[in-house]
Image (cartoon, rainbow, N blue to C red; front, side, top):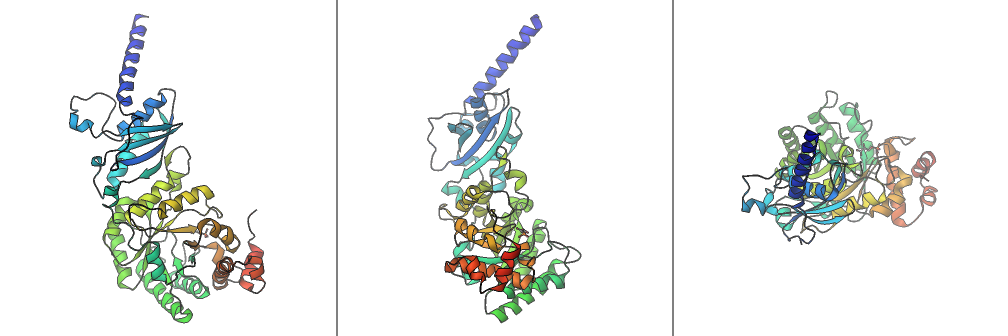
Length: 429
Ligand code: 3PG
């Protein structure tokens, strides 16, 4: 009995002690400095931790704090502590002094705000929902080299949405067939042809041979159509190899490369961007769902979008709202905002809609995105009953109809490719 009482009072003492420690990091009177990095987290605790303690724990463990008092603490270190400056339901806002971070080092910043804190006992769920960089940090990253205006100049398309396709089947085609499908896509009306996210340099379709064959196909299509055509070859690989492949593309006369931002990682991408090649950088977000989809836990797509733009991607997949990807309109609009809103002078990045698109969904898609978008359809081009060429034409016709203010049905009366696409793939209800 006596021992139990002692145990209880010790537990209470320790709890109280820790509670005060973490609560030191909460100050709702604090006004963030212009140089602070601001993060918004969604926090859910289990029964062992009170909410305000958890809020303080997030700020503490992602800055200078830990679970106990430290004999090594100095007053100059205390000045670097993060502060919870707003609590609104489960949403907390945290301000971080900029001195906590190494400029231009995204891995370092994420190791703090997306680091150990995600495994903290007492936090049932934690989501980094948004991030806002101060000017001093934004300036330390390269940002997009081209941005929306720049990629429009590369493609010589001043206003219209870009029409793109992804070579399908996503894996398995040998190089000659890959190049042939690319040619058909461009000749039929696509501006952009892209590799799929998991094509790199497999035995059946090696990188160098594919680059050569597909750029030849591009040249042929450009000559025949009189239009600019671009190939986004996937350079995703180990970082040095990725940079080597990107240089091969530049030397071969390519204008674009694509890479997988999640699986290559921030540092891999920063190295690629810092090579500063004359190539538009297209970021695929394959794997993002492992972090973004749980509404309560992980990292939001908004954070991935802001970071990817800041590090220097010219284009990024942001969801479709009307296709096969999970996000709804509101989330897609948020992602678009992260790529296009003012960010201390950083160039904008072009939103990419990709995943389950086909001609019938083009009108609602453009209503959401506007015209600054790459509309990419894989199955929606290569699944056309008359093949890739006509599938590309049908997508281009759907875009033309919207730009002319005509319904797809009306446009299809004089355009057989679109009519056939509308017959097999109807507008979702
Ligand atoms: C992508 O890269 O986004 C997907 O491969 C899209 O393919 P889909 O248009 O066939 O859904």
